[in-house]
Length: 314
Length: 253
Image (cartoon, rainbow over all chains, first blue to last red):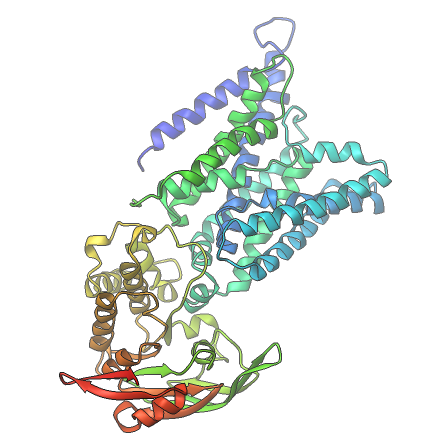
């Protein structure tokens, strides 16, 4: 595969930098360097890579399902739906185990995303900008519900953790749920052809022998679990699912059997890069990775919107 | 052979298909014609199993199409439809290869590669193999999608307005290819398609399904049933079936 050596080198360099850079200086005798690495830096690096891969993969799945490249699950209500579940379970059963809370969040995220999917079937397709706007409004409504609930019940502080993705709080023992994303990625790689078929539209997908609704539900299920895990552990991070799939689609096309690994890889690298940058620009303070990503992501996306269409796919 | 018995369907309280019964023999190029809103596209989608009727039955080559799962249907019939979403960023070869998906479900065999290559060659797509479908002209794109349906190697092919927005050159190109692959010999296909251009239908179709307001007005071999009178009644405007240099044409009067 072309570009693989460069990609791997980039990943290794970035991960290395991520292990070395932070508020704590590793080159000192006052601290146990190995402990800092094991407890904080390694988990943090892995968390950024896993979250980034998951969010980017989720973006492709939703874009193919609704046949619209301008949609990002992070901007159509999926994280807000997950938060709604989290707030609800926190109120109903404050002492519930993390796995229970996450399952509830995944279920509400799935319900919220499924509602958006149904909305997408009603929205006219002539102007592709319409659907992302509908998604923003829908996400805004869910977000307002979450905020109201949180405000009424003194949970607003929790909300701010869930709403802005950042990795400074990642420590050993508090990020491991993100490994679920690795499992989901394997499921999505197996489903790759089917998700490409979804992108041809319901009629073609079914005419080519695909069980359409089952495939959509499986795909959106993976998206929902990804968001539940990401929101619970590091917080929501919009634009990853928008920018990364668009870059890969322009560069290599939509044949996901070949391209899903690239989507996961670029998502991982970009989010880790954003986190690293956030640690550096105001050292020793930190800027949330989600904020950094939103700035770069928005610029990159504007460029993607206006640049010309590709002619060849390898 | 397609056997449709008392098919009815309504949506939002509007009756789209009214007690449609019909049989279409195999090996034909059957044109579904009729005015806008006659239910042509709905009938085709019902025949393809993509829309469930309120009542009635569709049998294609003896199989109840609505009792089959998608996988089983995809081995009997293929479909060309009006896609509305984003155009896929697939290479032409990848798109055509997806026509084989119902046969291999993700694990292509040499048979699938051969069938893909044959479809590519048959539709003169080899020079475009690596091009993105998105970058093709309307005519080339339609050819690629027809090739995908062809690669599916199904006895029946259903095409919903395959000529929409195509230049005369591409209309001729597509119709010549469809005509050439129609027949009852091994490897040949039976085709049903929705057509708007009556001259094209008159020239290429050998079976006619004339629809109006959800009903079948007439169905049978084109030469036997299509007359100026039938067309004029069907479209509620004076039309004449004539001949120009030996080829049939339909003109408004």
